[in-house]
Length: 549
Image (cartoon, rainbow, N blue to C red; front, side):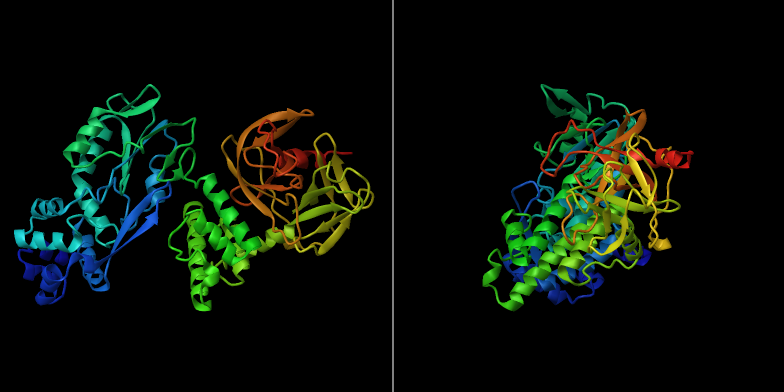
């Protein structure tokens, strides 16, 4: 923060003062304020909202945007964000906002209606006249003119988010006091308000009437006093036994992206890979996932425009994949898988994976498809340090030979129950084999399955319904409980265990082996939720291997 800028700002009294602090000529400022029609300073267009409907974006022209950007730099030195405010603030993120509400009994999500449109010229000018800014009347008027379009804050101007945060400061103060008095947490990310509690909300905050969430008088009074309206269609009260979200992120046990987000991204990449760029883009636009891509009829475009559209599409996918990285970390296997997939589809480096390439190569060289040479049996196996290849008993139950292949079908070995077997157990459902031609760096490190708890997040990696050139399937799963099978503990999980996944590996957050996949549905089409899906704890297998035959 530049204290000199802050001091100069509070001394602004006239239009000339504003021009000086913006480092522009007074006549240029007069021209923009009084000679140019508002419609000539902004370009309006619509974008689709995530949950339906459209949003009007008013983007300033280049010259006005430059003025607003200069003003933004000044305001960033003047405005001190409230501790509860997280949206559009340097050093704060959507992740930080969500993390405040982790592991809470109840979460209340509210949305301010027409956020920017509720902030008009008069409110902006009035805020600048009052403490802590106390500008001169002409200076306050000029700045309000610079940041407003047709008397409102335009969604699309670089100054709108910080002006909105400044306007919200009194409301934030009131809600922080309310939260403290009721043992709650309160945060605001732009127009998204979140309250949470470790107990239950008092009825003065929120209550349920006839299966409808009713916001209490105390919240409504603050909103009315501070000049905001509540969006009645976006009121959510979520208890810990349901999925709790804050600004689109799951916060029940850890900050995480929604499963639907990952599934949608997977589907888009699948379409891109199998349909080609043109058809994948058409489908994407048709589903109204974005209006940033201008052309549905990409086939009619010139080669140059066609490539520009494809580049736009790649940037959208890049942003979606990077969002997973921002939330889950750069070492997250889901992020690495999809980043790698996009690079492979585009045949160029859209996303830099230099830090992750080594581990991904290890996975590719450590996890294999097992295919019977005489039957249709298929499964997965992996190399475990100190042992060899591990899979399920039922995968290699017959005595015929099994090909062990990488994703490109390059054979690394042939295993046999007669020649390569170390030990196996039908009761536990595992089999272990010697692999003579594998390199030391191909073997995965062994972890400890004794401390796994319900809710623990793990990675399941396997080859379900393998097709040529498939890469290992990576799923994020959670432990849901345990059951007994043949007097052995099976850890049950969320996620989908598909035919071909048997013998796949379960990795913990440190990428160490904690289990072996062993049960689930028969195919991708099967939707029977009663099927218990799970894995064998690695400690159970290691104990059996170490016991005398």
